[in-house]
Image (cartoon, rainbow, N blue to C red; front, top):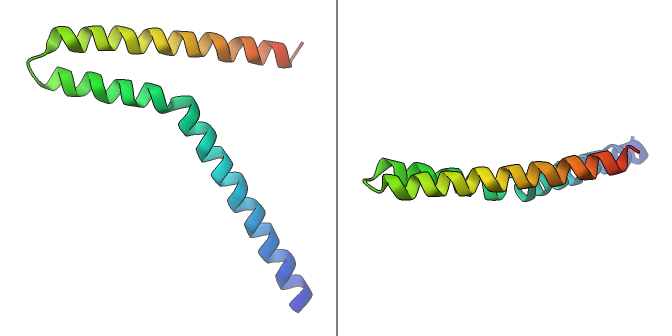
Length: 79
């Protein structure tokens, strides 16, 4: 069982690396959007509603831009 235990351990290491990579990609992809939404929520909860509206519009613009980039990348990969 000693040889097999090392193989099983390596499978767990590979799985952990893949999960860590997925987390890094998710944070890179959605980080700006999440920060923008918290900014909008914070400003909306206070009396700075006009700032919240402009922050929301900026966040939506960033989301649209990122979605267009992702679509272009996806289409380029599947040509």
